[in-house]
Image 1 (cartoon, rainbow, N blue to C red):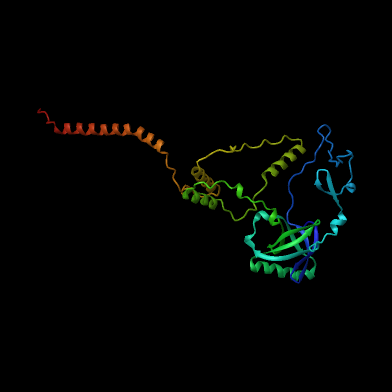
Image 2 (tube, rainbow, N blue to C red):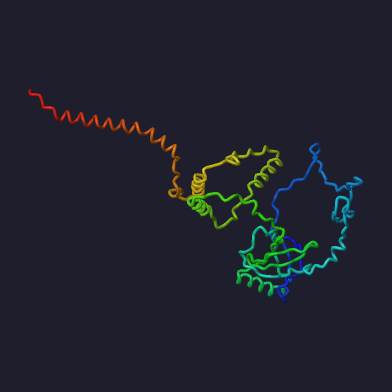
Length: 315
């Protein structure tokens, strides 16, 4: 496990649980340095004062709040340290909510909370089991980097997880982004639901970052002096293409079932009806063929009757 990034305690009523905070995620992206193309030297970023143009060190840099373009207020680290932060060393549980009522948009980075020492084992386990049995999540306040934050505590694999959360006023209202409600056929909705069912899986651990895999292969090939493999040509998707929605849903369900190795016998639940103009043209084209076939049948029957009515010649 990675190193502890913060230590303190969970405040649960009058119960105190010493804990250590450990990041629950890790960045697996491939990072690049900026280099000078002429000689491959590293390109560094310098912090320069815009007034005198001189580079400044970290010790010469402070925090300023811009009131206007011409006036900036300096706020020192000492002043920030003296600000009242009751949750500076504690994750203070303020309330409990139903676990499924939290909007995922509000959830940010995740951290594991580990019991800090044997004395914390019992209250830690008590809180964990209370969360599990009640099927609730805890809303908590905590302070990192001189800022009070909102958090969510829940259980994952016998460990308590802290999710950093956005404050309510930090979430933008999306109502003006929603399109005007279009008319939808009930069969289109049913087909969309069937598509979701056909794409449902129980485990998402098999997903991989295909771009990172390809990038690792590129770096490995170049480090060995080999030519990078040419990427496979994929099906290019045209953005903004207006498709027949029902036909697209039917094709998507069929493709999803093929990917899962299922039968496609009932993949299409809605038969697309041809347009009226197209149907009329189709009927018009077939009509002469039917009349021709009818004439042939009548001619054959008439000929047969004539042959039957003839008297045999005498020998």
